[in-house]
Image (tube, rainbow, N blue to C red; front, side):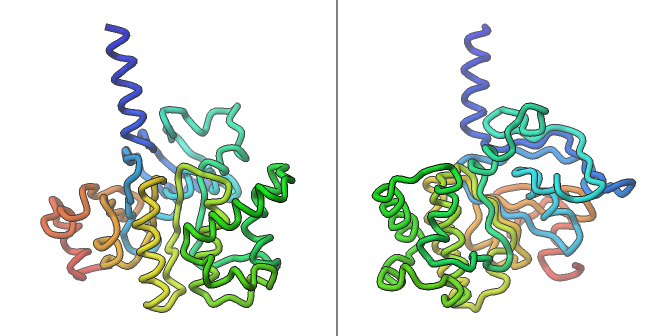
Length: 264
């Protein structure tokens, strides 16, 4: 019986890459997240939607402990990655953030060359092998469809790139350190429609190798690229389902009101 339970536990760990168990978040006395349970599947794109201030970005940042930096932050419950609680005292947060990459709302390239931006995380890890770094930079830029656009200018400043190119560069920088999970906080909100389409196509391709969680205000985007969608409202998880079902036949009236524009 124990063997069967171990097999079942391992299967669930593979299936559910990320898990939240009765998660509550407080900033001093304010309760920002109100007892959320959620299982996020491996190699799927999960979108978080909801009005501003509903808790979706706060919840996203629990998965790489970015909220640790916020004054007054306190969490109750458990956040698990591959079945391991990442808020245990002995967790190495630096190691965690190599596993869980983050892409922000506005592109944030470093004021360095394109090459140095992508190689940065690897160098921080102490990797000095020039041939390895060169290959890894090229591979990461190819993954985001940027290599052919920048290979002749690899030593030029990343700040000279367009906004869309900068965001793809930031994704390449994230991929270079080989995470298994990528968190994206409104990664296209500062971009034009053409750049947005390129990023969306890239995100869709990346799920073959990575588990992706994306916060977006754009419900059309969530519908286009995500496998699952979670609707948050005032710190609560109102509904979480396959995106196709949630957008066409939601269970909750609140969800329907939001996606049809009646509030939010």
